[in-house]
Amino acid sequence: MDVADLGLPVDVPSTALFTDQYELTMLRAALKAGTAERRSVFEVFTRRLPNGRRYGVVAGTGRVLDAVENFRFDDGVLGFLRERAIVDEETLDWLAGYRFSGDIWGYPEGEVYFPGSPIMRVEGSFAECVLLETVILSILNHDSAIAAAASRMSSAAGERPLIEMGARRTHELAAVAAARAAYVGGFTTTSDLAAGFRYGIPTVGTSAHAFTLLHDSERDAFQAQVNSLGRATTLLVDTYDVAEAVRTAVEVAGPELGAVRIDSGDLLLVAHRVRQQLDELGARDTKIIVTSDLDEYAIASLAAAPVDAYGVGTQLVTGSGHPTCSMVYKLVARAESTDPGAPLVPVAKKSTGGKTSIGGRKWAARRLDEYGVAEAEVIGTGAVPAELAGRQLLVELIKGGEVVAREPLDAVRDRHIAALAVLPLSATQLSRGEPVIPTEYVHLRSGS
Image (cartoon, rainbow, N blue to C red; front, side):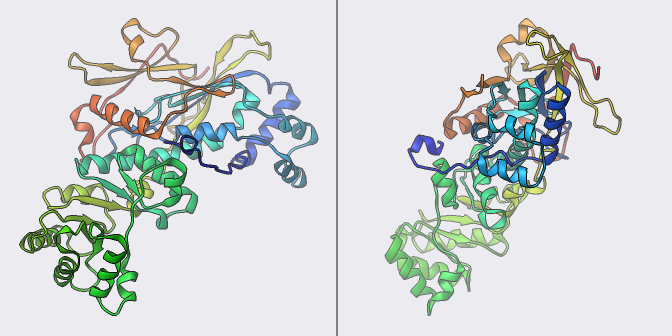
């Protein structure tokens, strides 16, 4: 759920300076050359998945739509550009009236993607499309990396809930975006109140070690917390001696104690000991939450442990070792002239070194086998084969400059679950491997 659905006021500033300077200098030169208004098609894709990953997750689409809507050059922004002499007055005049009026298509948020997938397609004049490159890549690269890590962690956790708690491990604004992406990828709650306010994500949180250390004894700390938050609260039991803390926690809260949290030590061993102790003390319904620098591998290693939930911070907000998806934004077609009816010409970079791309305005579809399991990501230009017509992946997001596909965050989250369900079972394995399905190209040619 987005904040707009909650009826909450949010001051959204212009996103026009979330860009690189060369976007503006290209605009300036194109205006002078008379090519700025040529109809153009840009596509976002990645040439490869992070090493060992079996699939990628599209996340951040909703934030891209917000960013495009708020990409405006107001007086303050124009004044900055004028003061720094970044562009000339002709370009400033053009920017003053900038409103994206083109079309954007893309994989719906929460969908999975593979190398070469045209994750987003931006169409309009060169001038209005080129300006959006940096902000679109900034959002999609970050959010998709977090969502992919979250998805892997969610697969490792099975039915056990995951708590996002990485706000203190990243930039304060990135933390909000990370919480949103983690929710898309399968996390159930966040500790970040800004994410809860902006996106309606359920929030949780009780106490840290500092609260225990504040009091004269651990018992005093537990009693204060129970008095304030009730017996169903979660008590942190590893400040001093875990066994003693568990005993004290049950004495203070009784068998109605909601949960205990373990944040250090050999989590597998400690969780078993704590579960046995809680059961012996009659607190059989008290849950065990573990934290402590978890990643998908640590979570998987705890599958047999009596753990009820996981809290993840650092590894999540850094993409579990892959903080970006290496997505690029490339011009793949442009009109022969500025005439509105001029035909599109495929274009593509030809250089060597693994950075070649394929020209042409593309469609994408996922082919399924006889059992309804995905077997290939098919990408092409021109007519879509009849057998794939019902399996196309791109949907219209912005039409004529107007957003047409904004949706609640829970719908995005459900879509991701559905997308994973169609992939081969090996997609959720944590062992390193190639993309779980191959990418096939039809009717394409590189360069032009």
